Length: 337
Ligand code: AHG
Ligand code: MN
Ligand code: MN
Image (cartoon, rainbow, N blue to C red; front, side, top):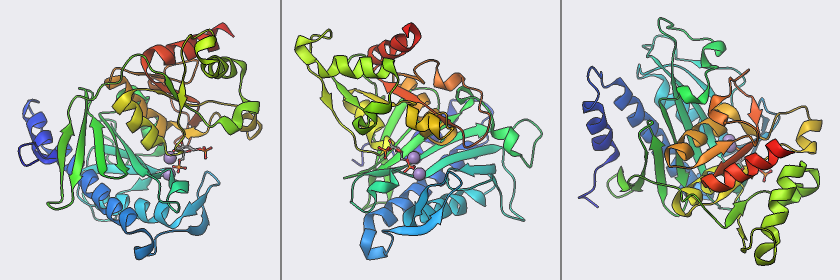
């Protein structure tokens, strides 16, 4: 593996292609990677480090936090907040945006993250991850407010995730394709192992939480019914199903072998007055940029996710992403409805 580039070498090479680049962005990516290594270490030690179980607290979304949710959030804030690269941060686990600590230098980037995705899987030792997204603070704004974060996903200059699975993998895009790096624990470096990741246009594998079926809207029901009908049905082929309940793991599978992932809006979600289950800025936007950059598609069923103008940082949206032809089919079913 020593023949392959490290993440740091890779981003420095990318930086050299941009005239006038200051290196600040490279340092930011490095910090994010360092935070992911620290979270990976915590996740890895599990019960040995006393990080399993609930923290008995609730986040702004009304979800009970796991100990590892809080620890991962603290690591992201601590590692990224004080090096002068970020102007402010926003996290799924924080009510409000987090300014850089008193006395620390202000950078020009806005860092947005889901510190631990799939945290209900933590205690059962199934893959979890960290999702991150970087925007630019508006020109001349040294101390950004929440309104400065409300930029559509097309404005992201970096999106990525770390997946803490059998191996720890960091996947990211700066808008020029998608690259994956595997953590070599012996030397403490992420190594480029998955260059130019692409998603096949067609698939026979879908991921959706089937227990919500009775609440779905007709277009989603129609799509899944047709998949379930298999060879004898209108699709003329059998489909396979997966549901990990960690979006990071589902997206990584789709980047590896194709597939479609859906967390649609349903009657249960509507009854709570929410627009979806997954969060636009912490989950849907970064994953949508990665999926589109890998040749896939990502919509709410009705519109392209990356085009949505966020109304508030914790906004939730329906998500349909993955292999292009399947996502386009689901979107067509919604528009025909
Ligand atoms: P988080 O752990 O950050 O709250 O996110 C969990 C998300 C997502 O990763 C996953 O796809 C989905 O919630 C699982 O939802 P269900 O428990 O309804 O299956
Ligand atoms: Mn999540
Ligand atoms: Mn989370």
